[in-house]
Length: 111
Image 1 (cartoon, rainbow, N blue to C red):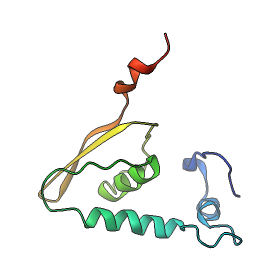
Image 2: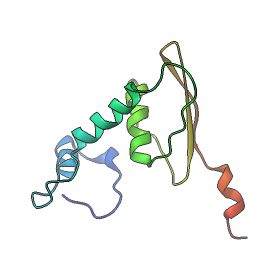
Image 3: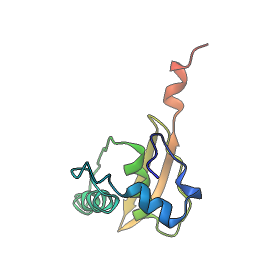
Image 4: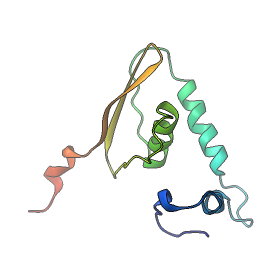
């Protein structure tokens, strides 16, 4: 199964998810799902121990970061286009401050 559009992975079996994450044989330079997760986790562990960090990225990275920071939450979190999410980490304990905030886009809606 190689989707050409966004897929709701919450209903896929583990085998179907592995199939989606497996790169096509004719395009070996693609990042695998495991490589992607390792890259995101490496970025997270390389953050400075204190201070503020602004990350601008796509929803897949945000969802993976949430999965790493909040492993007890098994539900895939919604993250929309141009959404703002905010996490505070104090003494190694992450706290979700804001998730999928899009009020800043309301002024752009056609009337």
